[in-house]
Length: 251
Ligand code: 13P
Image (cartoon, rainbow, N blue to C red):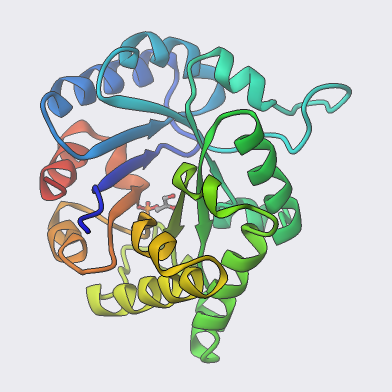
């Protein structure tokens, strides 16, 4: 079964409103007619304006995080309903920067995954090992435990709303990319774990993105691997030329 390729841009903490709108317009233009699935994930403050640009196009609007609570006295937080209100359909959860700088744990992330699904948002669930964990031979065990714990109590029926992004922490923003073979090996391990906890069918259908210094120069090689179904792009998503070049590799 051929899985659709899915490329998402994680803009991280970049772009003012004017900059974000301009970039979104360029991406919409360059994405016209492409068959792969495409999302852009800007900062919260520009979502509403970027939504006006992408609404009705083949570019989905995503957010980079959300609260684990529905509403109430949670200063500084953004709820899933608020994201939906400004046109967001997908949310990145468990990014390694949230895990390492803001102390997000697997169980906290799992709570957010469940709430997002309940509220009708799709999820990109990020997993990935640090350099120290890789060097200690723990990459597979770290990643599979993040997958299992992140998906705890989530039924197989909901998996069509979830994408897993494998982002080795040592490859994020460093210019170091996992080799296509190394990345594919971890993707395969993730798929095998999904087959074990759900079913072979569910594992086969799951879209697993790679993230970590994916760029036009290496995208084709990564995306050609049997278990790599897309990319979660950081730096190269901040310019329409490089993002569009990656989109072309996913066609
Ligand atoms: P870079 O593409 O900048 O390495 O970032 C990857 C990432 O963290 C996407 O979520």
